[in-house]
Amino acid sequence: MDYVIDRFEGKFAVCQNVIDEKIINVERDLIFGDVSEGDVVTFKDGKYFFNEEITNERKNIIKRRFDSLWN
Image 1 (cartoon, rainbow, N blue to C red):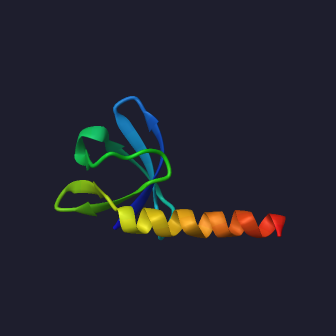
Image 2 (cartoon, helix red, strand yellow):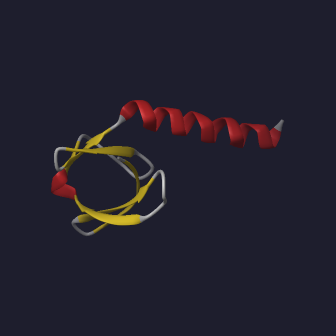
Image 3 (tube, rainbow, N blue to C red):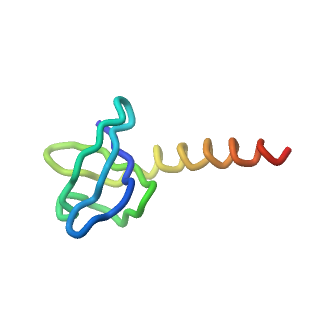
């Protein structure tokens, strides 16, 4: 299951499920990797891991959409 980090609040990361858009709070201690807002984490074995591949795909899609506004 994949989640996008929306923001950080105290010791929690507020994350949105990429499929059903439900919001969950995840303790920062359960997230592995150097993550920031907008990054995607994948839930596996009770932990959340930075998913660089999906993060880059999402950022490229957003960039193309934004660029298309100016062309």
